[in-house]
Image (tube, rainbow, N blue to C red; front, side, top):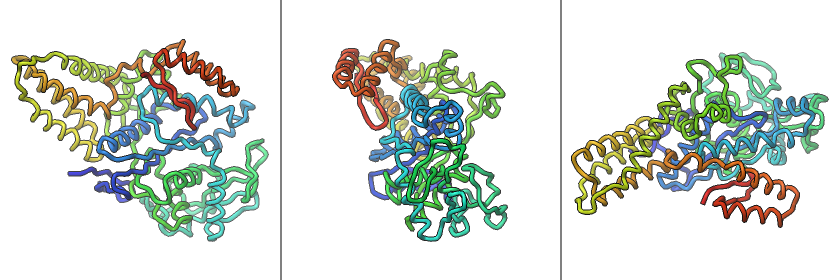
Length: 465
């Protein structure tokens, strides 16, 4: 049937055809690093992990960019309250985000550009928009996009512009869907911003939230790319504004496919601190739920359905994972003298698995195919033994599905022991101090313990040999 996605832009499922055959350019909205990411955030990142992994399963070469929003109103407010620089304030939240990605087995993007390192690109876009008379400067030094000057505004959120409440402008990055307002591309410096500002060709201040994603996605993926993802809360105003300012700047179509996941609720209620049902990954692990169980729970509901995250589902997830692991382990038992007879059945269920995921990432149907295989093989074994050929063939099927599910490995493999974490922290400090000899010594010690390190722009990534 071919791969299809529900495109928010067109409100229908469409066959996926990348701009360049065999290659996919993917942009996903990353965290605002003013606090620890919560399970609602990771619902979106898990859906994007499924998308990334399945595109690779289908043979596509994926270039995946996820931004880090390390400058916005909340970050300025909280960093000033703690009397810390933006860099100092956001550092632990950035580290926590990457630690949580690894614990949950979420595939790393190719690059995580921080907004604060891409101010020149944002300024260049703003200058272009001003040159085209599509943006204007106000008395306080802020610069706004002229929404009325972009006729296609509202296409993503399916808005009726004529029925919307009109206002002159809005400084806040988030506002009501019923409002049609010019939005801030650049925010002029105010006293309460303190030392957080940039001196640029468009003035003293800082970028608005929306311009950050446009500038960074265009830099790394080009003016026109394949897929842009996020939660449904990003559709308006964030993604709507991204389209307007990007297409107004370049004169080209911005993105072909927009994919959005629905919200996560907890035990049937909206997640909130006041209700005591607001969780980040560490809090759930402290309750003795393993990261792989949390991964399964976040993954196993279709991304366009609301996910009701319950403790009962966590228990069910553990049983599902154990069932697959136990079945996989049992495939070590076979009779070398038996003749193969099950490969056709395996092929049929693998095709069903793929057909389901081809249909807008129908993960529930795909998991159903996996458990049908387990059930039918177990029934077969009640009166028969597996041949060696069948056992190997079935193992390959399970391993192939696990390239997407990522639950076969022991969860402890995704977590550093206390001593290992201490060595890694000491090495990171040595690198910060530019003590390269000590950093190399600690790298070698970790390697002896089976920990392989890779240093990159996003920090140091580790994995077990």
